[in-house]
Length: 149
Image (cartoon, rainbow, N blue to C red; front, side, top):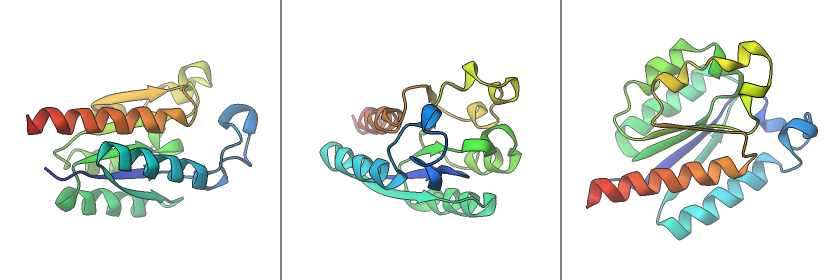
């Protein structure tokens, strides 16, 4: 089983640390990527970290992951609530998928309470700030270890 994990990020996360820091914190996406790579190395995971404001790019990365990755950690951001296309792409991926949200979406506007991605995710992490990415990677590593055993 591949130990490659795609960490995918949706729209506006390129502004992490600059956009609404009272909700999303002060860390940048580059900070998150560095922490994911460092933890990945500890867990024996190779990390591919991507962000896009374009739905089709996220779908293309999911399609790429189908052939080579053992897991996906995804923060679909606003696409969480709108994208059946990302759900459909994730439904073609036969390995663990963990959905991550920096904020607790259930304490926010009503429209943020629904996630298309959750219908496919093996786990959902919300409200733990950027630490949610690390929790997601730990869970993927654990699931990959269980399959190997």
